[in-house]
Image (cartoon, rainbow, N blue to C red; front, side, top):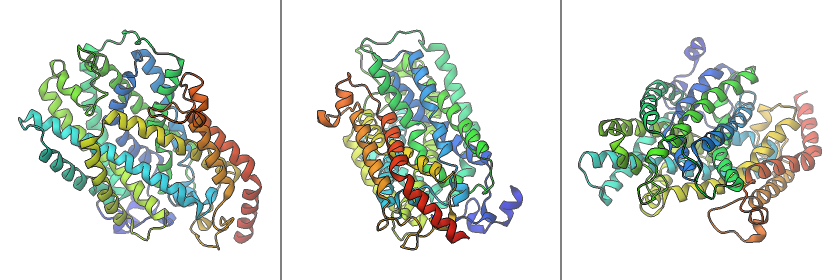
Length: 491
């Protein structure tokens, strides 16, 4: 890999501003390996967000063993991220440039808009947690929480988080790999405290039934692998065209699923001893989940909480860089004529406004659960359609055709829209809604499967399955025609 890196333009090296957006990455600039891409993802996976997710999952009322089962099964969805990272090496471009194949150049913009909003949501989540961690540190230093302090922390967090995604892919890959070892050590230290105090044999709370199991599984799947499927090719496009597909999926799964299972399990174990107050108040289900660390200082030494929160802040900037980078290239796929790093700046300004609202007016765990449910409705059917299209095209992506956006594009279909994909997305979204168990109220006709089955949640599976099946049926003939045209143009 060193020889390849030495030949790269200066702007594509670490700590230089990456010039690439959704344009094609030439073979001579493909510096990455499956292991390097997995390192980038691993650096983002050893993360406080997953510890919070594990604790919130335990707050549903599950026993520790039940949480462990849900965490392991849910994180198998990282295989989907591996599969949705296999198109980038051949296409040489990002997910939502590749998405022009199933949806058409114009139709893809609608789905890109959904993805951009999703990335903004995850960025804001990270910023909220950075602010909360900063408040913990300020309180430990004797500085009381105030509006001015919150404003300062938000402004500082947004300014700092711009740096990595502004510089680009190579910088992010290097920094996130650097973070793996120190964060493994700090979480290992936290595990020692957890092992000494965790009550892993405590039973589940009354009311835990099979329907709640499905809700917990949907929550875990979406916040682990499924919620990242739309980002995979944004980073795998720097792999060489002839890279081993098995190596890509295998390394990515090892670098993500295993650390996330460990961190979420640690979060669930923390909940067993610093989860609730004597009056039954759920410390992880409030406006600030880091309250648990301050209340639990009789178990976690104060000095450790201070050191841990410092690590947390650095780490959250790392994972937010993935979201901010992907939202930038998604803006380009939407058709905005912006350089990738300009799109990062625009997104940061938008995140600033939303974070102010969320920090001052929102309830973190409720915000997170509502966000997960909204994401499921579009991303589960989209993922099914995206992979079904790839299978119909015999697991091939045509790089030159994907760079064409006008009528010259072989994916133009009907005025730039491939209607079978739009229809499949709509059907899959309706199926997901019908089987969703939301925290907010939906009309019974829009939520019939869940509301008539004790709030069972099959949204992920029905959304993915109906979307994929509908596309296989509706899109097979038109995809065959497109592939015939592409073969003719390549001849």
